[in-house]
Each structure stands twice: as structure tokens, then as C-alpha cells.
Length: 227
Image (cartoon, rainbow, N blue to C red; front, top):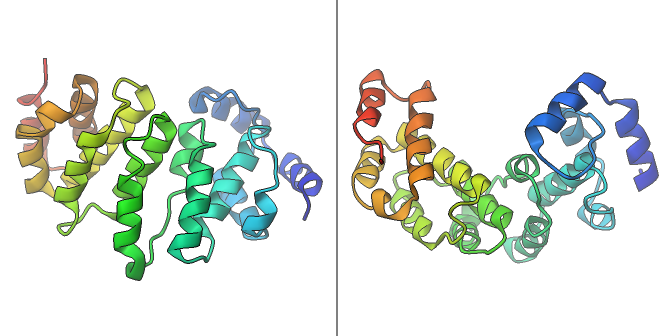
């Protein structure tokens, strides 16, 4: 399938109501066609990395998303794949493309990818930073990595960018569900110095909204609000 056929297929499977909804929540300057993510994922299986890298960037949201999905699911070794992932990350301009293209990390390459994602956090491009954050969240919130994940947050430079702050808040709230004691200690200590007020308080809010956080711990979050 070439690019023109891809666009035709996307348009034939678009939904006007979904497109209107999507436009409101994505907050992107890129045109949308109106296809749901599962359909784009299905289409992505028909393309190779070399094919999608020739597709125009920022012409259509769904194409940007497809490019990210193909890059993140490609069967390459770390050295090859990480180069493509960085190239993709540098094109991201909205949270949806960022968050829908996380990498399922092979166990044998876990340490290499961990360092790679941590190295994205200081990046001056907010969505490159967020891409590092959401990948750490999706693959490394466990007892082995949690201390290093929290330590990596000190390298974030783009505090104050809404989608960076929200990404970090999402990570910390998810950590509460997976590594409760370590997260409580972080929020009581280093987190109060590292996170800005918005991200810190949003993390507490997201903990209260989570079905995986106990009622007792949700009550605890009210005592921790940064003022």
C-alpha cells in the first residue's frame, strides 16, 4: 500500500463524529481524518519502517500516529531501533501520538532502553521529554527500577509545559499503584523539591482518581497538597 492508498483507506474508514471529538481533545495543529486508534494499529501492520519513514510528517494526525506505531513495534535490535525512535520522537507535536507509540521492551535489552528513555527527559523539546516519561511509565515502574525512575525526573528541564507536567503526574500516580511505599516516600521527600507545584498536585489528584489506589491512600493525598 502506497501513501495515496493509505490516505484513501483512512478516509473510507473515518467517522465524522469521532473526528470532531478527537480534534477537541488532541489539541493539535495537524489535520485529522477521523479514524480510531485500533484501526490505525491494524493498518500499521501492513507497513515496514522504511516505507513509513518516507511519508509526510504533520500532514495528517493518523499518518503521524501510524509512523510512530510502526517505529515502536519494529523488530530491530536496540542500536538500530533507538535511532529510529529518536527521529520519531523529534517529530511528535501532540500527546496522542506520543502516548500511543510506546515501546514493548525486550527483556534482553531492558537496560539499554531504560538508559535511552532516561536520556530523553532533559531534552528541550517537550514531547521528546514526554515520550521518555511515558515509556518509563509503561515499562519500568517496578521494584528494580522505581528509585532510578524517580531519580531521572530531576533531569527534566521543561517544567511548566502542560504536557510534560501532566506526563510526569501520570507517571507518579501510576507508580503509587505499583510501588506504593517508594512513591509515598518520594512524595514526602524528594518529590516536593523536584516536581513543580502543578505536576506534584496533579499527581495527587490522579491518585485520587485511580481505581488502583486504596481509599486510605486517597485520603492521605489530601494532607500532601503543595500550596
